[in-house]
Length: 60
Image (cartoon, rainbow, N blue to C red; front, side, top):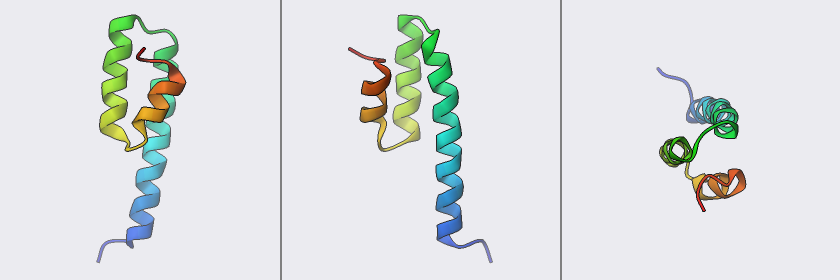
C-alpha cells in the first residue's frame, strides 16, 4: 500500500519548492529568451505560476 495522500502532497510541495528555488537562481542571470523558457517551466510546475512569474519579472 503506497503512502497516504497527505505524505505524497508534502513530497510534491517540497519538490516544487526546491525546483522553484533553482529556477529563481537561473532567472537572475538569464537572457530574455532564457527567461521565457524558465517562465514556461514554472507554468508547467505549479498552479501558482502567474504570481511567481510576476514576482520574478520574467515576462513584461
